[in-house]
Image (tube, rainbow, N blue to C red):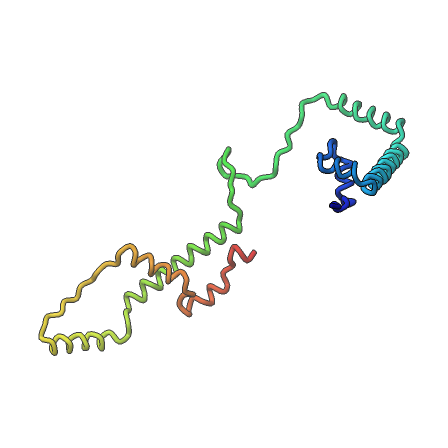
Length: 194
C-alpha cells in the first residue's frame, strides 16, 4: 500500500520542528522522493537564512552598532533623575480627587431625556384633565343603560396592577408617541447615531 507524499507545507513544518513525529520519520525513511524534497527545502531555507544574516550585517556594521550602543548608554547616564510619570489627559473635575466621567454630549443627551420626560408628563396630564371631547355622550349612554336595566351601575376606579402598568409602559415606549411630539423626536439626536 502506497501512502501519499508529504506536502511542501508539511516539509517546511518539519524543518522547523525539533523532533518529527514517528509517522513522519517512518515515511521519510521509506519514501526517497519526500526525503530528497525535504533535504532540498532544508538547503533552500538555510541559504535564505544565511543571506538574511549577511544582509543585516551589511546594513548594520559592527562599528555602527557599537556607536549606537554608546549613544544609548550616554543617554541613560545623562538621565540620572527619577523617571517621569506622564499623566493621561483627563477632564478636570469640579471636586479635587474625583474624576468626571461625563462628557458634554452625554450631559446634553441626559438634558434632552429629562425635557422629553417633562413634556410627556405635561401632555399626559393635559390629556387627562381635558378628557375626551364626547364625554357627555358617554355619560348619556351610561344613564340610558341604567334606566334600561333597572340595576344600579356603580363607577369603580380600579388601579392598574404592576403587570398591567408595565405592559402599558412597554407599549408606550415602543410606540412613536403622539403626532405633535414626532417632530421633536425626529430632531432629537440618538446616542447610537453618532
